[in-house]
Length: 481
Image (cartoon, rainbow, N blue to C red; front, side):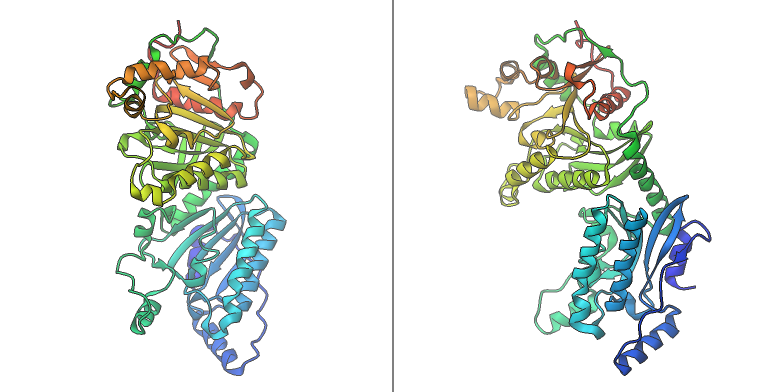
């Protein structure tokens, strides 16, 4: 059995694969034609990719799988034609695409003609993305060159086999270039799946069976989101009593700083299912979630790590929401941060630019969206995740233009005047709700909602947010008078 065949057997339902491939046209050059014939004899394949249809956990999918034994899985013109045709047929038939890739990149025997197929394949992927169907890629060992730098990296979810070599240029190419004075080389251990995942460049590292399980979970989220649209079960009860706001701003700030209070990790633990995806530098977490019948993207800051949000964190939040938007999946953002990193690196990384882009992009999503204020809401890092249709909060949450010590130092020349600043700026969740600045708040007796939430397109995802928060932490007694 070929390597491609083994991957198909591990990933697809038994006996479900049906090939879409026609025999490739004969090459014009006799020498190259002979090389192709020898490659076919050695590998048992007629080209470097196989395409077709099958089922995965009962769901119909289109499949593209590399045959590395055929000229190193390299992409020539005929190979590219197969790949493009597969994406086009998948879109026409409404099938998600799953791909198992193993390739050295561009086929050197075909030179510039093969090199330019990167453009052709990338355009086909972009057209497919416009269909709203998911594309999931599993990088097998190895994936380098033009494949990694184009369609392998454009999938909605990119995972890799444990220990797989993944990089722009393979070791032999790097060594050859270094020998002629080009580049400083790449240290060992850099172009390895686990390292790339640690740097936020892959969504997961899983073997073939793990990819099947991951793909099945993802397809369930993507298929169910369009019809569920964030629906929940009974949810939290609604209350209409006015919220107590006297002295509650500083109490909210104090409560948010208490050790052991719920964070994003607690929300994740309260889900019925969660498929993590790549985050940013360290503080941002994201993944595909299910709570009851609701399917949604969950993305936000993990406050317990006691670090500050970076430009990469904020950009990663935007990227995740863009994928969800394209796939029709509602978005739930969680704002809980001590603030953005203040450093030379953050300024040079374009922190302000990323905040502006992420806030702006959040306001124009086609899918329903909500932001949950879960605790600390310090400054621009928090507001970057507040571009949602609706904003809701737990009672022990606050939102302010600056960390309160900084605001107190600026306004009163006294960093210890934080309590006064909290009350003056009305930063607590109860005050934010009373002032009409947020749309719902979880109290000790249920959830209080602004009148305009009923019937809003994002009502269900907002209710999902507070239902999830209610699973993790009852609000304190100060909630309702």
